[in-house]
Image (tube, rainbow, N blue to C red; front, side, top):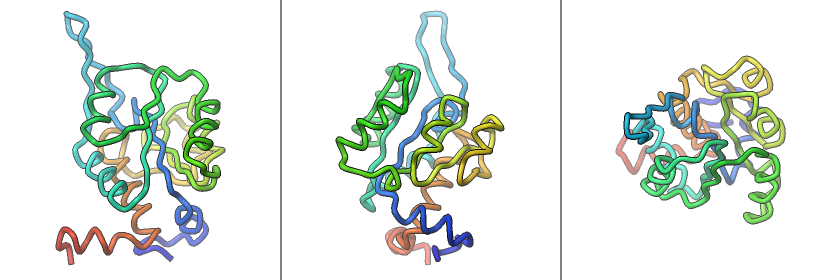
Length: 181
């Protein structure tokens, strides 16, 4: 069983994860899109969510972004975090997901996905481990393996990153690195 994780069935699913795929708006952000008078867009990202993703990547778990909208802000955030697999303007997430599996030579059960809306439900059902953020629509929360305590853009991604690291027995590496214990 994972460190601090009590559901054995859930831990078994999480232990297989090699790639975490994230929706962006409402998951990696709080869902707000700010557009100024000049038409420039901005979004709110949580630094702890970003650090959680960096910790995952340092432990060998890949990260990809998969979003329906297209935004330069997302490109900048991905580059800042070192995420190279970024898919924007995607209407059919299942189709792109199939390509991601093929390119990374992964089975669906080796992937995880975090979503927040009805467009995410097909992937929430197809991946090995699925999570919905606390403020996701009820339909997404109903099909997810795990619902975060934190809302999107406010710690939900970090929560899932820590859950993966603890379930895979990797939290000790993180604790040692940051002298937590």
